[in-house]
Image (cartoon, rainbow, N blue to C red; front, side, top):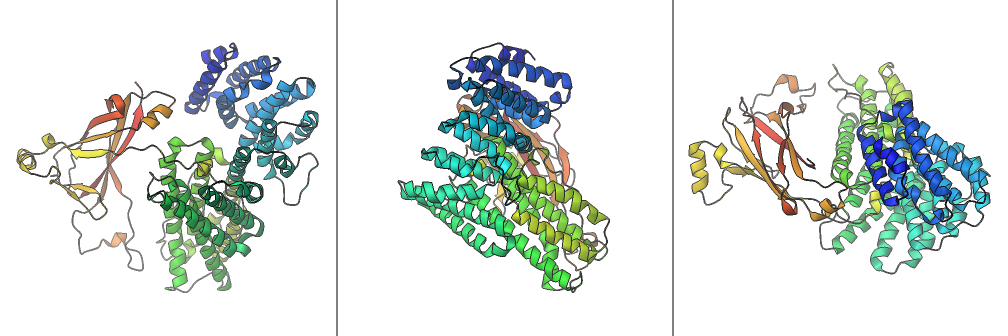
Amino acid sequence: DDITILVSNTSNLSIVRAGAETMALALGYNKKYLEEKSNLQHLFRCIWVLITRFSNKEDTIEIGVIDALKPILTTASRQSKTFAFNLISCALKAALDAKETPAARKIALQTSSIVSQVHPLLTHNMLPDLARLYEQIGNPTNDLIIHQIYALLPCSILLEKGESSSLMPNCNSLVDRIDCHWTLFQIVRRSFAWGCFELSHRILSSRLLQKCSTQRSFFWLRSLSQIANAENTLCNCGTSCISQCLELLNSAYSTICSLAAVDGQDGTTSPAGKFYFQAQILRNRIDFIKLCICTRALCTEMIMCGGNLPFGTRQRLFLKNCPKQFRILAARYMQIYKVYGLHSCQQTKSSLRTMFAMCKFMEAFIEHTISELSITGSLRIQPEFSHPKGDKNLAMGALLLRLRTGALKPLGISKSTSRNTTELLDAIDAIMKCPCPFPIRMFQITPISYTIIDISLDIDSLSTKEAQTAIESSTDDEYVDVDDCGNEVVEALPGSPLKFIISGVFPRTFLKSAVIRFSQIIARTSVYYEGQLFDDEDIDDSNVDENGEEVPQCPRVVSRCEEPFSATLLPGGKFMLPIQCDPVLAEGQYRYSVFVATGIL
């Protein structure tokens, strides 16, 4: 509250920007704050007083008060639909009532573009007022045109194909007024984020590709144009043009891999590479489409066979393996989310969560569909996954929510395999024709900041005989083995404690880009039981299905530390942190998982 009052009573934009970032961070940790009506009214009143005071100034058209308030406006609008509605309503009313104030018009355009990114339906309902505002502006500058396009792009996905509206200006005519190539590229990036691939392909093919000054830029923009063309074809034609879509996507993926090879680094397989993110997103997208097409073909065959497949056939085994394949693909997206989530914007996080939800939805739908084909329920239905709440405004997110409530949940009541297969077939067709949002991080050809952590075993934690052997050894890591997967393996006696030391250096780019100055390193540990120490010839019958195949078991958590380990961050980002592990009481293979993060005192 004190920060809100301070921000509302100042005229220094630096203070406004710092206060907005702090309030947005506070709301992120307390998402129930705006659920109380008094808190919502207080926050909106203070922010609107500040906006009104700036809009009354004659030179406000050069002042970025909305840009300074963007963090808190975006966060509050995302958490409260009432806040977003009041913001766009008051901004449009002020702009339409004060025709002689250019600042009020610009503020209305900026707020409409912000609200449209979070709640496109609200902006869609305000199109009549926006049309009146556009008529008053007349010949807008490039800055105002960008805000118009950003406000209209999310609304365009809500209109049915072939629907025309005289209230919505033509985005193509607005794009034709822009001469700056960098501005056009920004519009392409935003179009990818909302699934408006037709506009992206038009700008790339007719405006940007012809103006490339280097060969690398040409190949990069051509790969983006191929992606836009493929996704636009998939949205318009569905599975009937899947071969053309995959051909374009594979060509774009090959181009990106070639660009990574030119840099002289393995940029498509290592997070340190410039094109790692782009290559992983595109490869996962291609694999998802291929899996959907294969599953669709098997569903068609099941329908022709009367809702069943012969036992032991390749089709039956492949359909049984489909949930596992979508589960693996979901794990890929989650790994990308964990690696890039800290370094990316909210739209990138939302897009990655939506892609993850697509794979989990397909996994759950297929398992419910083929559960009737299994004997004695050997297929274990996965627990219901929680769909990300913040992504429901995206076209794909809204579709997944409708399919989940209207198609997936009724499957638990229906016992007809033929009906379930038909529902799965319709769901795949709907997902294929729905625009899939691409992360804005796709357009940043820069590697992320990362650090290599060295893990060593504290010799003092070993027994006297083992410590003496390690000290006298010429190789420091002789008591540490490496398995076939490159994981370090330490042999320890049951009941004996172990102490590890992790060390490394955080990159300066990460520390400089952080909003808050870090002063500590924090680590949490978990111990998982992986299995027996030596393979036994006798297989436990409880882990075998009806076909004699072993069912993989999830690792069991043995212990998890309640209090994290911490140490002071040394100058230059260096750190060294000892971690004391609890002794294990039974013989077996255990995996020690260490989660490392930075924090403040």
